[in-house]
Amino acid sequence: MTNQEMLIASMEFEEVDVSYDLLYLIQNQIIDPSEEYVDLKEKWNLVDMKITNEWRENNFLGFDIVNLYCVRLNVDDWEIFGARSDEEARGYMINKYNYIPKIIKMDKSKWLSSFWMPNSMEYKSLLDLRKENNNFPRTFLII
Image (tube, rainbow, N blue to C red; front, top):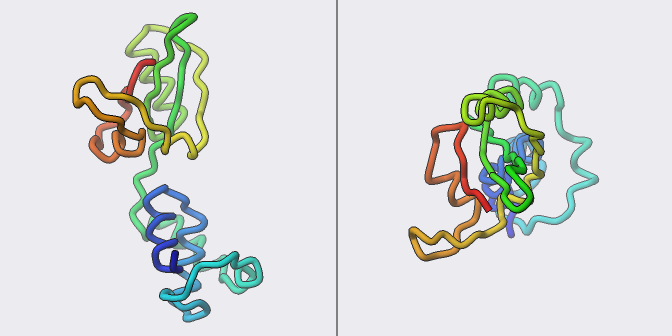
């Protein structure tokens, strides 16, 4: 994977810090976008944090971050849903169930988990489901 491909992947998986740091390193010709990506620990200290923080604040790369949440509905059933913030997740649960169940914020690695979709007769990852829909909060599935 090249540095450019890593930048694209980090943007796809909404890894904000990695994306802005890689963009800075590439734009300032500190690293070559076509070179193979390797651990850049010695290069990260060359990132101008003032500039990258300004990019983050202005959302220069246009991130539309959606977090992944899970709630236990009963002994056997769980609902997985996406929301843009913890507050939005709580509001979604109140509107849907008239109470706030314990909401668990899941880590980003779970976006890659695939589940069988009986309607389309195929396995889809949560990331695929997220890309198909841009209205949030919304339920992805109940398992």
